[in-house]
Image 1 (cartoon, one colour):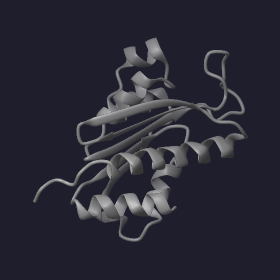
Image 2 (cartoon, one colour; image 1 turned 180 degrees about the horizontal axis):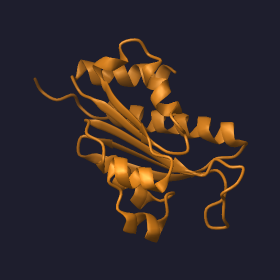
Image 3 (cartoon, helix red, strand yellow; image 1 turned 90 degrees about the vertical axis):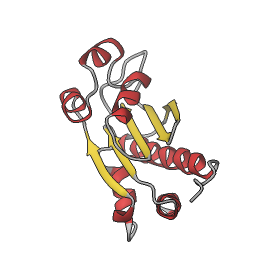
Image 4 (spheres, helix red, strand yellow; image 1 turned 45 degrees about the horizontal axis):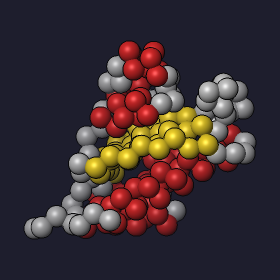
Length: 158
């Protein structure tokens, strides 16, 4: 993906790092980055924490957050990002379907968070289509969000 390449190139030029925590995308976001030759200069980790237990154990998401707000929530995605150590962080959690949706959080609901340096943005999106379409749309949106954020931030002075 062009956005993944441009993100990695920008971060590499700034000597910065990238980490990803994903749930419903199941590794697709990490795969978009590692498909780019030289990704290892920037990409430090991609964690697929699909089950709530994994979100707790691997990313330090508090059980109370999951119980109170659910896995598909801005609060959970914020906690997922906090469990990553990198200059740029992305977290994704959602309901890709075909099952699992509710009236409050229907299939296609995906929460995406990006954090870059001291800035953080979290959005709740509603994508349509089948499971593959929802997952692909979530990856594309996450890449666009991070690309826009790092592009609008001035590089640090050296």
